[in-house]
Length: 354
Image 1 (cartoon, rainbow, N blue to C red):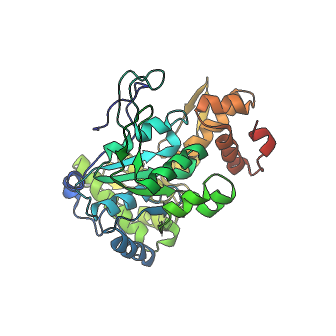
Image 2 (spheres, rainbow, N blue to C red):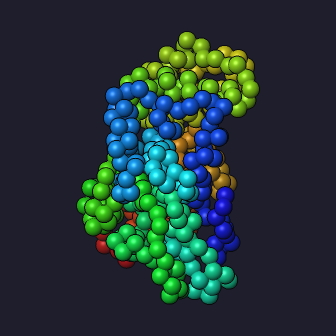
Image 3 (cartoon, rainbow, N blue to C red):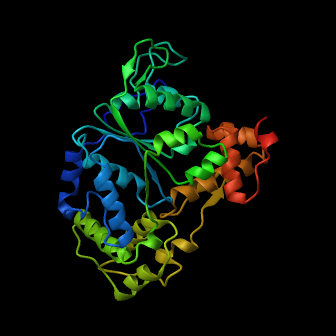
């Protein structure tokens, strides 16, 4: 990681990588059919064709897809096939940065600009100079910050927090969300003007259930990587492949890989999977709370982990939503949106605005 520590003492969550480094890292497992993407289905071929058209340009791309579909791999492939391939690729999870820090994380800050800013630090825009800045889960960004991001996209310049020097935003923006962006606009989660600025070229990543024929291909690809990393000759049993083909994989490619990796670790030479509905036993394993600690089984998706964490802390705090939001480091509005999605109940707008 090449990023510098922030004023809070932690290093940015973004990882800066180059196309040549990723190519070297994947050589042992063979070349990918299209950049970092695998799939021969009609849906994936259509996606790859779109990427081939947009990658050489500098226009902003907005990637939409369910959790686990591989949105970051799509973003990396766009970067690798662009004129900026030799520059850095910096992914940023907008939903993982506390609202109070996101401006300093994105644009950097000068010494003394806020409590704890003991030295000047560049932000993600500067770390990604000459390359691509990938804003993942951009719909989780606070609305106030969305306004500032829009200003940077329009002007092409920005200032560090507490600074007066105008800096050029020498980055290509690729954004992504697992929400329906138009619904996010209607729900006042995503600014409409920012949506239209980001969605110059929208890309939809198909869920695994729409990629007929790709599941077995991906399973074999993962097995190649697992065997190469562990220097083993393990193989799937016919029953395991049947289970892979017949399970719907609601967690998409991420769930598929996690389930296969767990089965790979447990196997001696022949990899077995239980019947469809309980791949690798993951469907029967549940997150549990005990003595204030959350235990997550291997294979739990990020979305499920977040759900258990939010609902568990809310229960621990006796339903105090404001204190729950403060503990999680998110806005009260974001908490209400998550609870609405989890519980299927409409948000009390008056209570959320308090």
